[in-house]
Length: 419
Image 1 (cartoon, one colour):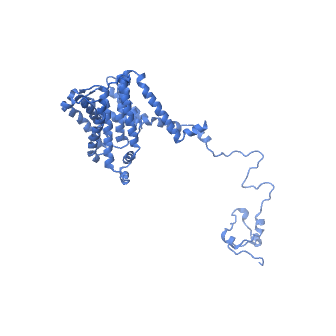
Image 2: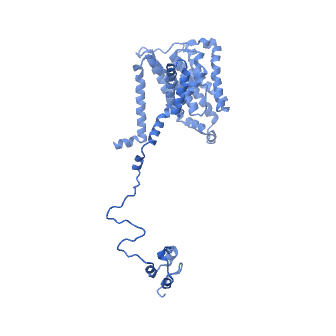
Image 3: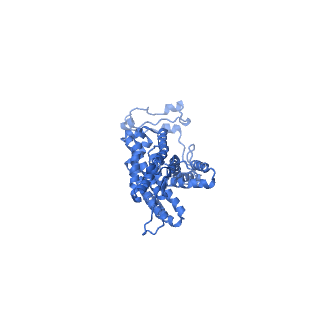
């Protein structure tokens, strides 16, 4: 048993626990569409596609240190790319995914170049302006986008060999894309690009001194983030089957940013928790108060921020740290190897610095003074320090004792036999 516990504390044990957790999560995700009702399966599908969008936003804000309030615009660009291809060109659903990803990647790259000269609130204001500007533009491009009426397209159809319902098939397709995106984000953050982004986030000056190209990595962070948002928008078109400009207002961008902060910035699992927050909290707020769901939504965000300032992903570590800090002090004292001083056992005399042990005569200063010093060699006299006389009252000599004492002065040569 002790060997097993020791093994679990090593890196191999941590990898084993992570693998078991991943297998358990995969088993739960695979069995969910067969257990829940169709509407609940639809909600789980929306959580997954929101997690894809938040993964891109997390790459930009959580790991890149930049802020964006216009992520909903990239989401809308991916959704409309898929919708236009399905409606105007009658392409397959799977063919729209790489086109939406590539188009939003180029859009983010083009947007990231002028954003290099901006940071902080100025960058947030520019991205927010992009999110506000896009819906009216989509309404103006009526021949392509359908204007205010939007576009209605076919949803994903399950193949005959699958034997699945439409909601189940859509769920599994979105689950596969979400797993691929999360894996890509994980590998990207563990590469040189991810380490460079972390260096830029922590200290731009130090990162530049170390050879990190700030302009390149900042621009690429926008491009990757926009690409993930475009993939999420494409999945949105597959799931909903309808797009309109009013579905992608600037409120969507603010909601995505709030979901990421609540889920956990700089965490690989934060986007999943943030996607659940974005999907379920508005519906819960609507059930609590139909008159003012926004008030309930805002209060829930405030409560979560007070309880978990680092997001829901950091809440388990915060709880574990609080429990460890409040452990009884007796545990720490019992684990201290320093022995405490206790009473001496019976029959054993207590040592005393003032009194000498019984049975031994106390040396007197006069007897010590009459002792003839032992001869020393020249080398020993030069190297060893001479003992100094005790300054206590027992070492004080009277004039009579001083006449009798025959002591060599300090530093005198050793006596010979003739002397």
